[in-house]
Length: 259
Image: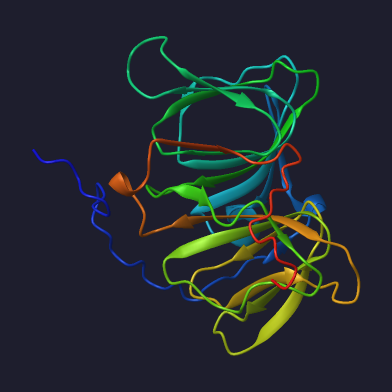
């Protein structure tokens, strides 16, 4: 049997039917409106999830793991993770050999993508909590980062646009972050502020834009952008992706101040 070629996933792509309405829940979820779930190793603060946005397909959350703890060895849905604070080890099993694992140093600025069904374990062997932003896909499609981490300069951002093949999250680590979002029928738009440590939801088939609203100041907006894309699956994604950004976690995706 020939291996799958790039773009040929395990399951053929079928364009999702647009939802009616395209969204009905919250677009902006401040940190204080998140849903905190206590775990044996720390906490899981759900920001964008079915309970807040009405979209059951993915969750964007802030995960905290306490010092001296290890998570269970699990096989779960696809995850995209960006470490903000703390240190430790991420163990990933890439085959079925018992006890054979790849060990990745965990430190601020580490970006990791795990495809569904990959067995992994987070170990906090440091003295401070590991704080991460995690996006989890609840469908057989991968979650992964998009232009993240990134920095918006004052008054700058991207252009208004929409996607017919993905849902996205916009997490503001610090600074003045805002979104423009279309109404469910895309006939009107409004501007909403995303407070630091909060998140904005960008539904499928809805116009949106994110930017730094402090046009007269000099404060940068540091943000993390992740998504679930319904056209990427199977052979199109590796089992494991890991990339280390600067230790401050703020490696700009776009460095020129005119962006």
